Amino acid sequence: MAGVAILVYDHHQRELAQKVTSIQQRHYAQIISSLTVWM
Image (cartoon, rainbow, N blue to C red):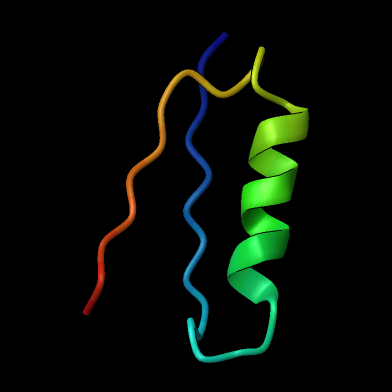
């Protein structure tokens, strides 16, 4: 099984980036790779 999750969020929102990073770290076995694009 494969899938893609695309999250678009305001990086100025307080602590949101840290929360996303925390989720990625807790689920490291399921997340093969991640990419951050700054626009």
